[in-house]
Image (cartoon, rainbow, N blue to C red):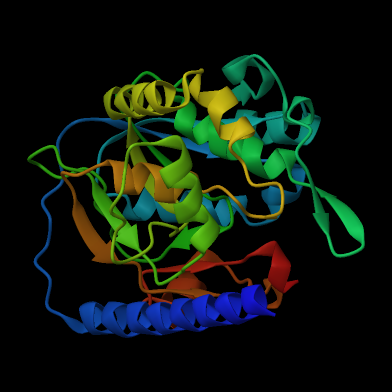
Length: 291
């Protein structure tokens, strides 16, 4: 009874924090924030995908090409050996990367299975694509932008500023297991006022090396093993690459993401989506859970 009472109090406190976060981000969204001049440095685009992602991916890529203000060197799709994905890369002049060559193993090797109510859910693929993003092993540029394949940019976005600082886009999401995980695997104590889970993030390979070292010093093992060993198996979503990296990087600019999620039924051609939603939102998403 005591533990249920404490848990109830904790849940209410988190709800209050979440509401406060939403209100503050809403206010921030209406503030006249200055434009951030982009760096002249080239960046790569890295997108982990599987076959089902090909439906929305063309919209994602069109948004990237039209709205990323930084100079793009190459676009990489990190994926399993799949004929449709490889043909898509050939037709769109995109670099294909076999996902098993990045870390030396594939998603099935993680064997991350979580008990959810009366069934077992395999979260190996979900965690694997996060490790790909955090690896720093794709592309030739120091900076690379990872964007979820179901996320569509509608308005201009700067990701690397002229002075070299990254620009992170923030949301109001609040999932406490993400922060608990960060504290287990790193020396970080203080977390950001907003969430970095915004479907896109610019990574620096140099900064990732620092993050890997921080994790390895704290956990006394390599960073990938640390992530796996410290994952709370009672949580279906117990790790976030965006929260981890965003909170680790101190020198940065932040902006509200101003986005809306839609079901596939709202899917249209890119220009029409911009005309419908571009004045109100910076980006839109077509998440699988809404279909």
